Image 1 (cartoon, rainbow, N blue to C red):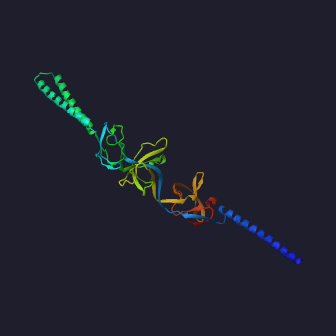
Image 2: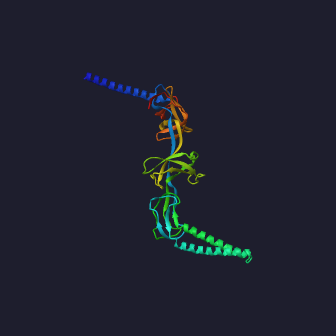
Image 3: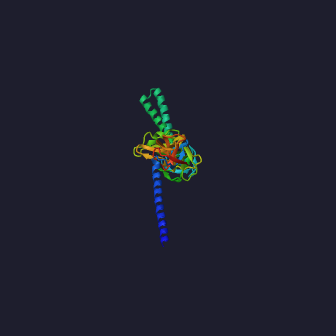
Length: 353
């Protein structure tokens, strides 16, 4: 019985001693972990990356609209009955091609009447001139006859001009839309005949924020895509508004692109890539490496096995990386994770990513 009690006592002493040893050892480890970032002898394990210059292109993603280079509603200049329609809806037409003819019977009758009056006025002017030479009439009487003749000539020219308007011609080459008239319809200058659109060249219209307005240069190229159309297209900037729009604080820009294959339809939306700058050796670091501070941003660079705090200036950013414009150089080892617990001069053990 006595021996059993001694065994139990020994076991209890061992258990208590083990617990005390564990607590002391655990506290030492915690103290060492806390001491490491403050410049103790222990090194903090962190991840890092060696910065290398690489090609980098900064751009803006914008929305825009596709517009026809030329687009008009066709109208007549005179009123009348449609005698013939010389185009197919949705088809292509050439510049100068007759599209529509209006009945000209009334104008032809007016022309015949005007020509008869002109012949009479011409004869009267001839006789008056002979009489004036014989001093049989006054200069004033001759001037009246001469004026009547010139008026008759002008009337013929006016009617011929009206007759030329009875044939509606395409002002430029393009694709003609759906017509709203038929043969026999009575049309007036307000009647919309159809739309004519030049789809060989298209305009890309978009607005750029005023902070980037100085990046817009005439003849610079942009890239764009259109939903539902495969591939990427290019366009050349040809014009801008002279001033920033006051309400939106944006600058309206227009570019021109070829559409000889008719793949792009005017009126659709465009997703535009507007280039800002291109660098051959841009220094990019992971966004997680940057630490915001009161007067800017900082990161840690490993030098001689220690974390060295460096203030940096940043530029554009991608989904994961940030462009560093000053503060680091090619070959620096930038610490990327675990940096929030670091202090300047902390010993680090870096695993390169």
